[in-house]
Structure formats: structure tokens, C-alpha cells
Amino acid sequence: MLSGVWFPLRFVPGVLPVFAFLFALQGLDSWQLVRRRTVLQSVAWGCLAAGISYGINQEVPGWMESPLDWYARLGAPALEEICKAAWVVFMVRTARVGFMVDAAICGFAAGAGFALVENAAYMHHYAGSPMPILVLRGFGTAMMHGGTTAIVGVVSAGLPGRDLGHRIRSFLPGLALAIAIHASYNMAVLSPLESSLAVIVGLPMVFVGVFAVGERSMQRWMGRKLDKDIELLDMIASGRFFDSTHGEYLKAIAKSFPPRVVGDMLCTVQVASELSARAKGIMIMQAAGLPPSPDPSLAEQLQELRYLEKSIGVAGRRALAPLVSLTSRDLWEIRKLSEL
Amino acid sequence: MVLRVDGRMDAVSCNTFGEACDRAIKEGVLWLVADLGALRYISSAGIGTLVRLAITLRQKNGEIVLCGVNGLVRDVLQVTRTHALFRVFESPEEAVEGFR
Image (cartoon, rainbow over all chains, first blue to last red):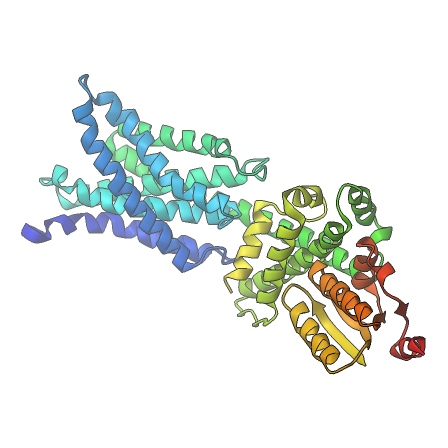
């Protein structure tokens, strides 16, 4: 048994399986939506969030006079879930994640990092406990932390209307659910063994469902969007664009913008469609286990897209939205290209 | 002088085209034909370069004309209404003939 200076490492056997689960999740990510570096960044954020939460939780008793049971059961879970969820909010709003699957992986990774630090910090509470209890407690808590933050990501990425600017309120339902689960865990509605088992058994089942739904959603999106991209590119290249409904729409909005801007709007349709089609081709290659072939013109096209977006401005981008999807998934796609 | 432009004339590559034309103008070339038959893309940055060259050459009693305009390039020139600034021909030979 570990003792003395090695005592804090007693939590490691409880947390290691969670990281094994995390990397297994990444292995299931058949579209390679999440890079290893992003997983590690998520874990690092989780560790930081745990430090912040721990510091505040240690100070709260000094601020209050009344019994702190309610804080331990509700306040602390809310604080911890908000700290962890901040990472998911950042990843979604900056288009670093675009689907339920990658949101779930990043959320789970943040939760796992949180659990790593939390288990180490609270190890002294369980000094006299036998190793199996430590393992179960550590594993159950780690899975709970990972699972609740993953739920924030899944619910936020999967909600209808998620592309409406990803306002903060769109994250509230997932966060509320995460806080409710965490608070239930802390309130000992079930015995510690039952709680841990419920999380250990239930969470993988949730992930299986998320990945299955996510896989189908991804395939549908890829097929539909790629067809649209190709159709637009074909119309533009063959000079038929203005004879189409897309062209009629652009002609209609052209009256509201200077001619130079309208020209750049047409260019934006072309460039965005090209990049979108290219991104899907790369994803198909990666899903097949093939490395994407280098494209020397990619950097220039991404730079041109930035130039065009600046040229047409916010009003132009909004007017162009029916022709050029700039949803969170599309922005995520462009960001993935720029990481190549 | 006939300048064949291919690929893209965007915010990055328009400078390369502009500099090539500026060098030609410095060497005394006042009649330029921009053969855009192989040009697949042009944005406002490229249009701006063409317009600047048109103004520069007009001030020197010269001209830049376009030929081979098609596809997206034609559409962009039309929606930006800059096609009226240039004489447009089908081929480089017709464009050269147009200068006579």
C-alpha cells in the first residue's frame, strides 16, 4: 500500500481508467473530428477549473454563517459545472467543435482533467479507506465529472436552433442538466456504491447513443452539403448562376449594396463552396485512413475568404446567409482546413 | 503587349499582376491586352488592380483591354459594373486588331 510521500498517488488507480475511456472515445471518433492536442488542451482546462473551484470552495465557509450543507449539495456542484462548461462554451462559440461527438469528447476530457486534480486534492478525506473503495470512488467521481461536462457539450451542440449565434442561453439547458446530475450525486440520493455504478454503467451507454446518432448526422450532413457545394460551383463555372434561384436571390439583394460588394458576395459564394467541398474531401480521406494531400493554394484561399468577409461586412454576410452557410459547422470546417 | 492571366486574381495574386503591368508601363508599353481566358476567379482586389491600370494608361493616352472573359470573371465584372470601363474582345488577336 502506498504511504508517506507516495500517499497522494493512491488516487491514480481510480482515475486512470477514465483516461483510458477518454482515449477509447477518441478511437471511436471515426471522422477524426478531435485531435489529440485538443483533447490534451481540454484536460488541461479541466485541471485549471478544478484549481479555481477548489480555491473558491475553500473560501466559501468563511463567508457564511448558516450551515453549509446546501452549498456542498448545490452551490459547489453549480460552481464546478460552470467552470468546466466554460471550456465547452469557448470551443462551441469559436467553432472549434461543430458536432455532438466532438463536443462530447472535449467535454469529457475537461471533466477528466477536473477529476484528476479534485481526486488528488481530496485524497486526505479517504486516508483510511481500502484501495477498492478509493478506486471506485475515484472512478465514479471522474466518470461523473466527465459525463456531466460531456452532456453540456452534447445538448448544446445538438439543440435545434444551435446556429443562432450560439448565444449563452443556448448552453443553459445542458448546464442545468449537468448541475442536476452532479447535485444528485452529491446529495447521496443513492449510496456511494450505487451512484458510482450508475455512472460507470450508464455513461458509456449514453456515449454509444451519441456516437451512433452523431455518425448518422455526420453522414447526412456530408452528403447533403457536398452535393450543394458541387451544384453551386458547377453553376458558377458554367455561367448559369444568375439563371438559378440562387442568382435571382443575389440580384434581389444587390440593390441594397454597392456594386463592389455585390461582386465580392459572388466571390464569397465561390470561395466558400470550394473550401467547403475541399474540407469534406479531406474528411472523407481521413475517415478512410488516408492522409490528405497537401494543397499549396489552400493558405491563399483562406486568406482570400478573410478578405472577402471583411469586404462585404456583417450586413453582407447576413444577406448572403441563404446562399453561403456560415453555421457553426461550416465555420468549424473552415477552421479544420486552416489547421492542416 | 498581351498578358495571359491564369488561375486566380485575388487579394494576394493581384499584386503580382499589377507589378508586372507596372514594369511594362515603365518600359514604355501603353497598349495592354489582358487575356483572361484561363482566369477562373477575380474578386474586388483583382478588379481594383484592373481599374487602377486602366486609369494609369488613360492618363498616358494608352489603354488596357480584356479578352477571353468567361464564367465567374464575366459575372463579377457585370455585377460590379466595371465591364463598362473596358473594351472586351473574344480573343487576343481580335483585341490586338482593336488597337489598330
